[in-house]
Length: 583
Image 1 (cartoon, rainbow, N blue to C red):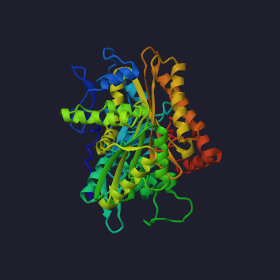
Image 2 (image 1 turned 90 degrees about the vertical axis):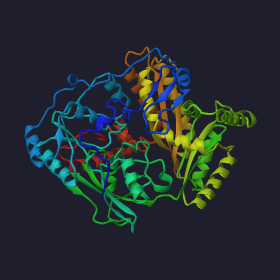
Image 3 (image 1 turned 30 degrees about the horizontal axis):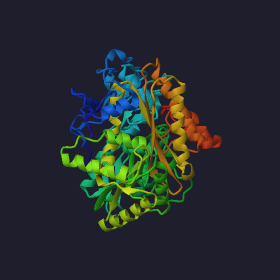
Image 4 (image 1 turned 135 degrees about the vertical axis):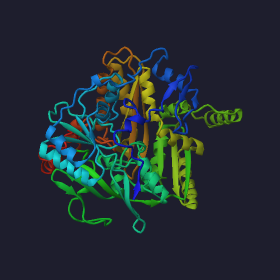
C-alpha cells in the first residue's frame, strides 16, 4: 500500500488560497519597479521576471496599474451564516470516530469551485450558502457509514474531491433547507495495490493527480492521465466528471483508463464483479457513474490501467502562417492516426499572450538568438506576426519510435506551411499550462475578469466555431456596455478521428460596469449558445454542473433526460446527494 501526502483533515486551506487559484505562496504580481513577477518556488517560472506582461495587460485590456481592485485578504467569520446542524446526525457521527468540523473556514473552503462568479464573490468577502458540516472519511467503509447516517437523518451530502470544479458543481443550492454536509475525500489517498502482471492499479478516489503520478512513478509506472488541474483535482473527481488529460492520444481519456469503480449510493454499493478488460453484460454501469457529478453517490475506489513510464520524452513546436493551416495540419495528423502524446494549437491571440509570459533572458546571446528566430519567421519566411499561430507537441515512448514519429509529424506540418520552432517553445507551452490559472487572480487585481470554457466539435466545423464564438463574444461585450475591447481567443487542445476539443478564453476590463459579473455571465451564456448553434457539444470534459444544466435536455434529448432521472429516482429516491447538478 502506497500512501499519498494527504494533509491532516482541514489543513488544505493552510497552503491553498481560499479566494483564488492554487498555492497561497504562489501568485503573479507587479513589483515596486512595475515589473511582473511570479512568486514562490514551486514552478519553473517561480521567481522570474516577465518584462512583457505589463505592456500586454495594458495594451490588451486598457488596464492601469494605478487602478487596483484588491481582494479581501482574510475571511471574517461574521460573513458566514451559522451552521444548520442536524443534531441527531451529528451525535451518531461522533460515535463513529470519523473526523468532522463546522468551523467557518473549513465550510467556506469546500463551498465553491473556480467559476468566475464564485471567486469574484469571495474576493469581495461575500459568502452565500455553505455546507453546515465537513466530514473526512478515511476509507470506503467510513463513506458507507456516513451515507447510511445521512439517509437515516435526511441530511444532504455533497462530495468534495480537489475543489477544481468550473461548472458550479460544488455550490450549495440556496433553496436547500436540510443540513448540508461536505464529504471531503482527501484522506482517502492511498494506492491499495499495483498488479504488474496485468498493468493495473487500485486506488482510493481521494488521491490527487500529482500524488498519484508521483507514487506510481516511484514504482516505474504512470497512468498518463494529466488534466490541466492535475495538481489539485482528484481521481474521484475525474471519474465523476468524465475528465480528459492532455496526453489522451496515447493513454486515453478517463473512460478508457477505468477498469472498475466502487461507488457508495443510498441504495448500497455499486461495483462490477470482475476486472476483465471488457464485458458484454447489458449497458455499462460505469457510464452511469462516470459523469454523474456527485448526484448518485460517492466514488470511493477505482481500478485503472497503468503503463511503464516512458523511456523517452521530447517536446517540440511548430509555427504556422495562420490558424487555418494549423487546423488543417491537426486534421491530417488525426487522419493518419499519428498524433503525438499531446498536440495543441494556439490561435494568434494566445500566441501573443504566451509571448508576454516569456521570462527575462539572462544573456545577450540568448536575446540575440530570440531576435534572430523572430526575424527568420516574420521577415525571411514572411509570416505575419498578427496572424501566425503555434502548435506545441509532446512525444513519449521508446526513443527510436519517438524520433520516427517526430519526423512524420514535422513532415505533415511542412505540407501546411509549418516551421519547426524548437523544443524550448514546446516545453514552455506545457509548463505554462499549470501557471496560466494563476493569471486570473492578477487580472482581477486590476479590474479584468476572465474565464475559459471548452467544447468538442466535428472537424468540418472547427474553423466556423472558433471564428463565430470569438466574434459573438466581442459583439456581446459591445452590446452590453463593456467599455474596453475584450480578449477572445481559442486553442485546439485534443484531436480525435472525427473532431477536436476547442478551448475558448475570454476576458475584459470591467471598469465602468455596475454589475460586472452579471454582464460576464450574459456574455458567457451567449457564447455557449453560439457553440451549440455551430454544432459543438455542451462540454468536452468540464462537465455540466449547475452552470450548463439548462441545455442538458437539448444535449441528450427528452428520452435521455427521462432515463437519467429514472436512475436518480431509483438510486437516490430521497435526493440525499442533492447538489442539483445535471438534472
